[in-house]
Image (cartoon, rainbow, N blue to C red; front, side, top):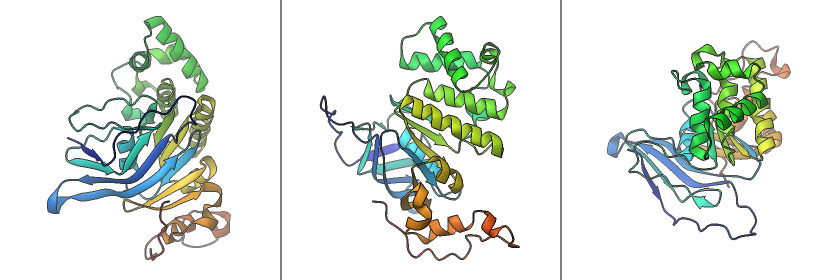
Length: 303
């Protein structure tokens, strides 16, 4: 069971006419697996905000705690022995409910997630149309005909042609790019305030990756949603996000504007990540820099 402890009382609903609160506020979030001598701290003291309409990238190497953090925020961290604590974990001005007594995750209204591999995240035995119907019935009262009409509209918006045929297909009959577009449409059809995307381009080639990122940005802008993207691709974040949260061994070591991170980064680790990116400046070198041997002495703090 996932054991979640929050050290503050649930926030009161915002007053009518009051300014819209921060979409997501995370303060001193810690995630631990196991207990006693065998305990492993996956995330330690993470703090950051996501504002309305903002695009945030969580970047770092594999194993840095990025996906674990995203799953905890989404309420999908159900691993046995997992324990989540936070001084504050608020979504849309209200404390997130992560009851330790629930074996199956409960949907958080206004929050959606695109999982890492669409080919394995979609139900392999259900048609695309039936999966849309299931999602829509979870957020609104909708009949079969209306659900199909809305599914047709969403699939058209994400650039899928021959929608009637696609609605009859099962996930294994789709290409990787089409599966990812279906996942985005499924996530957005509930009209979320926050979309969490976990490595949305990891299984795609470079050209399709750009198409999917353009799609994520355009869909969230169109719906007025914020985007929290988990990725190891720091260059992708520089292009498609407003701010970056950089993680190293479970800790947030930098929170910077994406367009000025090369200048404003306070952590040696962040600067090392940037130095490892292939560019035209280092195209002639025999060997690219690596993170091995980089001294991590000047870690930044997440304000």
